[in-house]
Length: 142
Ligand SMILES: Nc1nc2c([nH]c(=O)n2[C@@H]2O[C@H](COP(=O)(O)OP(=O)(O)OP(=O)(O)O)[C@@H](O)[C@H]2O)c(=O)[nH]1
Image 1 (cartoon, protein in one colour):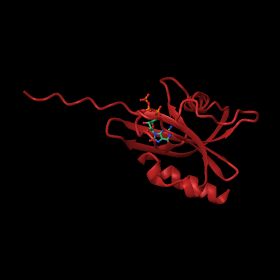
Image 2 (cartoon, helix red, strand yellow):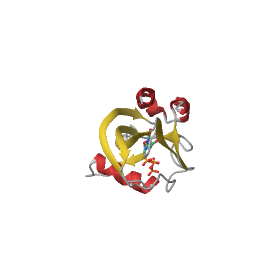
Image 3 (cartoon, protein in one colour):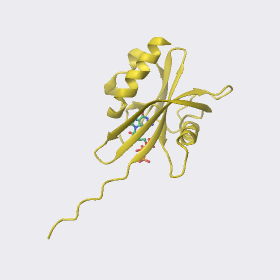
Image 4 (cartoon, protein in one colour):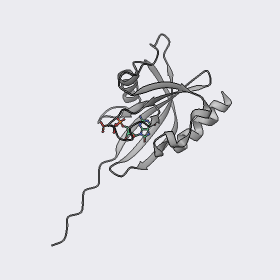
């Protein structure tokens, strides 16, 4: 009897923000128990079905760190195959809106403003290598 092949897991669409202020970039840390727990990453999350990725990002930033944000242009698009799921990551430049509350760790382990020297690839998910190079360049030019 021939084995039925495992169905491939569906592609997960993720929107994440590159928020730079005064030469530093905003990072969040993944919670214990989550995929890639403890990794630092760019704040954001999964785009729901029928959701505009920019709206998803605004929603995730509210839910995770309590900020109001304006979402701008794409910085990087990355396809990555994690062992259990393929992801398509849309990294957008974003800014905190005037009057936005300061970032707070509402639904993440921690939140911080980081300098270029803090952006070591090994602290981030493997899918973030390309965007990290672009963010370092932006911080160097900031
Ligand atoms: N927000 C964000 N997610 C990233 C980055 N890099 C990266 O590989 N991811 C991956 O994109 C997915 C984001 O989805 P999420 O944070 O909503 O998902 P999760 O897997 O913790 O959620 P789940 O527990 O609901 O399945 C995760 O698999 C995460 O590892 C990044 O820089 N920012």
